[in-house]
Length: 112
Length: 113
Image (cartoon, rainbow over the protein chains, first blue to last red):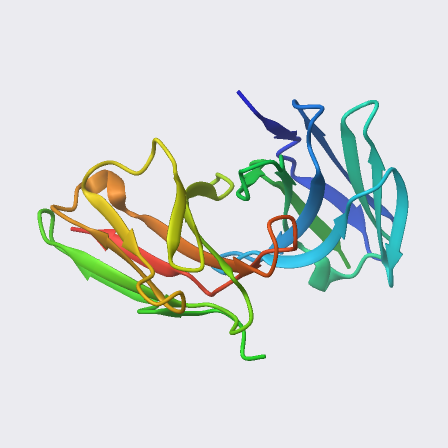
């Protein structure tokens, strides 16, 4: 069974610090990887996606992918209280499937 | 680009009633997905369409659930004879290609009394 694992948290960091969120996945055939942010009571909002090994940066966000270790992470630099949310890792296993497999999410709390 | 639109935002109904939700995807997106999310869990896949063809259904999609996308544009998800366990947020997403990022609508929150 294809699975995506995340530490549920909560992860608490002070304002201005780097928040590091981690995700592992079970199937080596995975094609593409996504990070979504979800505020309480709201729907998931796409913040990053990555397809190739290495780092991808977008503003304060960096996604890191290591396919050999089946590991993907999200770094948030200069964390702000507005970053407090649940972060969902999602994996697309490709092939005939197009659906995403989601982790349960990591709750991040940024303290002022 | 007006984003993915879902209607209604909230639905409260009695057990045993039928409900129908609508999703309008981003206009140029061929793929449309339905997910269900319960508290403390990530979204779980239900079904997806490429244009008007329903290409995959999850085991979560019991025979009480049916989805359509008749002209390859909007989609409907119907739940017949609702049960308490159907209470959840129903999310619709769309994408351009199979591995393109999926963009979610605001969801429909279903509460079964």
